[in-house]
Length: 78
Image (tube, rainbow, N blue to C red; front, side, top):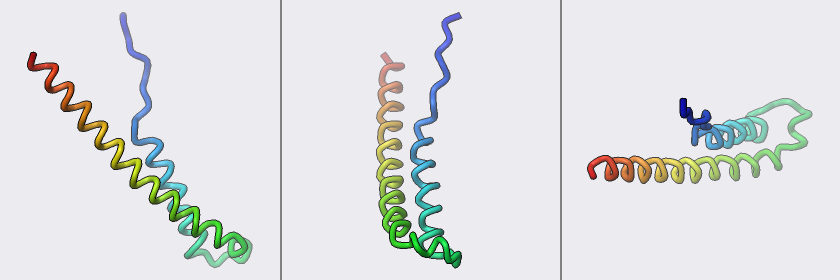
């Protein structure tokens, strides 16, 4: 009856960053809504920051996943 608590997928934060980055990209570069054009500069900068951060976070999480898999593989051979 020793159950582990549910764990959050490590890619959730990356997906949220990318989602907000795509949203800001749409609002900053592609929308024709006059109310959103007031915030175009902010959305353009935010999209660049969020999408860059998402790519860097994806690389970090993938590296950690590979290291964990390699460590588990080494531990099971002993």
